[in-house]
Image (cartoon, rainbow, N blue to C red; front, side, top):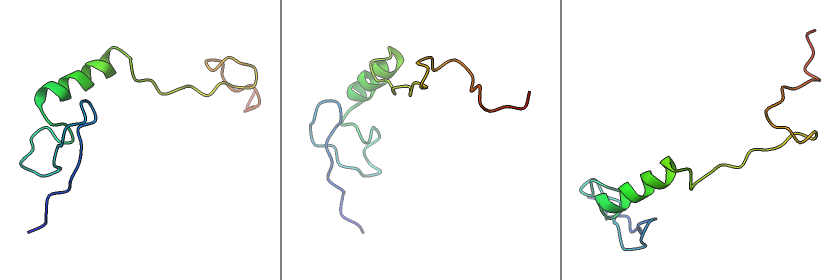
Length: 67
């Protein structure tokens, strides 16, 4: 049997072993998992958009052609 992988909860920093018995892995509890989900839902965590050289990331590529 493998030893439990040590780990820490990304929300609170408490020990949270990464084993099948930990139903909330990689979190230490359901509370920490819910806090993290709420942060994603309220857009606290964001992936930055890469702006085009023109500065408007929503504008389609003009050089792609086809027209």
